[in-house]
Image (cartoon, rainbow, N blue to C red; front, top):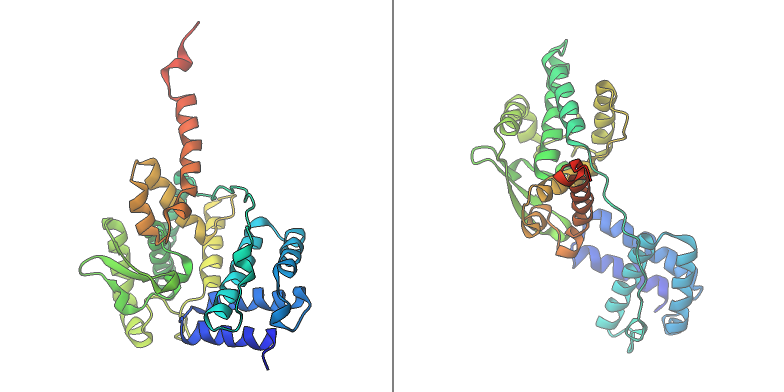
Length: 306
């Protein structure tokens, strides 16, 4: 049967088997398109015209924030592109629509560098003073994770999926397979970071080679992002840091810090693995805020007595 539900299932299979999309993207598509089929209130592809889609988008705006609406529309657009590609529909109604709405700029939350240093000091102290070999080994992994997050701006999903073959400690670089299976190579340039990762590798070498993952759980599976979140919360509490630090904030801090040091935004785009410089552009807003602080508090005009 050529129903909407049937075509959604075929499209999801196509995304998995032909486009080779990752599990998180597939899950997001499944959620968005299931919701789409419920909200448009029809089982027939032929009834999905411009009017039906406009009503769907209006419903989204009433229920979700602009960023979520934008993602759900993108999921629906991708589905209709598939229907057109497979000749299931002759005319794609999205081609007749102009969908533009202002998405508020939400500045990425960063970790103040003093706080970042405080966190690392606490972690290294905990490693040094570990009361048992087991705790020392576990804290060594925690240090390696946080050092890697901060020094490379790697996504938490990318960190958890790092394979043993993706990390070359002889030549100090890692290979990252990001969104859309895009590959990028990042150097490990800081001596302290390289040292922490080498210590970790020598301690966990058997486990790394046995599991195939650079970071893994006790069961031998890839490390979960939940473990990383809980671990960061634990050390933040130990350090007396009042702010809630998430793994993604290390990525924001990495990018913003480089931008504030006058690194070309195109290099930052490449290191972050962004497909478009428009995505990286968000960090220029943070740099502008920093610029305002510098000109307000550092410029000599503030000391003029006029």
